[in-house]
Length: 180
Length: 179
Image 1: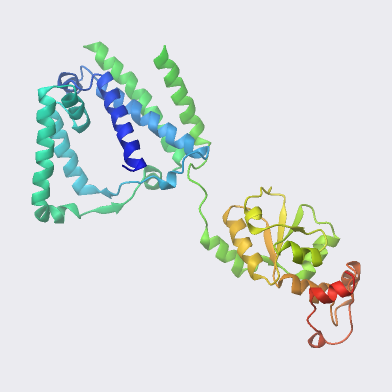
Image 2: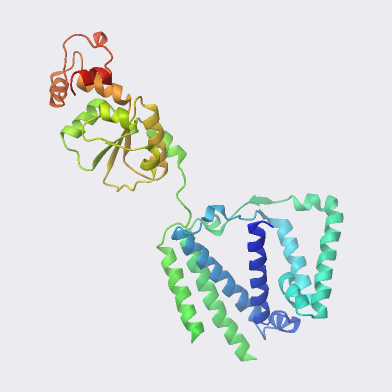
């Protein structure tokens, strides 16, 4: 097994552990997100984003991490919009997303196992149908875009804006949770 | 309480990020380097270098990239020997003016690209290498009075005549003369 696979395994285990500790293996907790009664998902995910973003920015700025070697996925507007809608619909119906379904399955929850099974079935069906989906898959490619390039501002400004959004979002989430 | 400390820390790091500059390492600006080369801002002539040395130009640092043996035989006054690998790992300040010398001009020109690519600002190479120094400073033929005076400053032997009559001087000849 290569070093990168070992590192990926370690990161995956740590990610799953953090999700389980945050209680995100429970579909009931995740469903609370959509009723605005329990915004744990929002807070956990946004905390992770802000932590990773600040870590990546400052480690790169201090010369410890080379950001130019970090892969930036390409943007495909319409396919990703469609994919996002399918993902969102599946999330609402199952009450679990891919990561949390794996956590739920690992914790022995039957609904988690069902969602993981459904997810792999979906991957298989998409694979079989891919030739007919190819035209949609290849449309509206925009290359590897980042917010600083798109908005013509510096990386630091985007970092600051995302942190501000997160802090305002956390405050709003607390307010919504306390209201109920 | 912990949440508030973390929120303050995140806010602080976020605000500081605005003033921290880009997190990406500096890229080689090929267009800028090409423009410098086209404008001939990449090299100095032997006469210019001689004037800089004589005038004790502030921050001037001359590096000779030839072998230790060749350097021992003869080198430009105030030059220090440096292997290419040593040179690229050296730290320079913006106040430094770096001049690179090799036997011809090619090796020094390669070193110029490496130093400029690593962000060192004021770098030049001696266009014709040590041969140009020997021809134009140490043994100028039919030079103006200023250049002749400059040559004599470095112990050179300016000669009268037409420039086409000049001979190519070698380090070995310089050594025989005791330079």
